[in-house]
Image 1 (cartoon, rainbow, N blue to C red):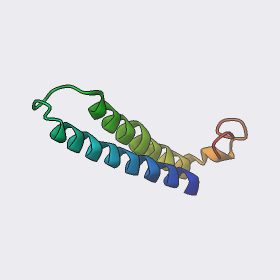
Image 2 (image 1 turned 180 degrees about the vertical axis):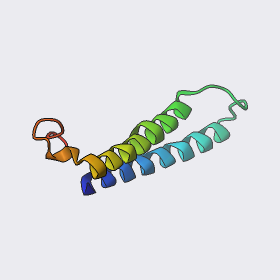
Image 3 (image 1 turned 30 degrees about the horizontal axis):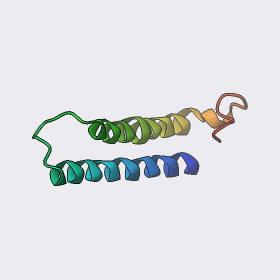
Image 4 (image 1 turned 60 degrees about the vertical axis):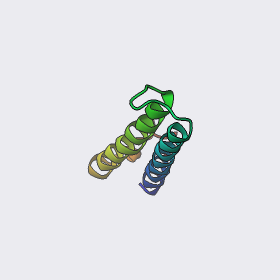
Length: 77
């Protein structure tokens, strides 16, 4: 469980850092307001698919102890 929590925390830091970079990069380069860039997607995906999904997996691990299955998640645990 500690490994899941640490991995979720790393994804959260990466997502926040990419959001900060996205905001400052578009501001410094005078992007028009609301223009689509891939940087916004990177920020959203890191936070959602990394942080939030791993927190859900952490809750599932706490409730069902999926790490006890020798084949299911042996690669991670």
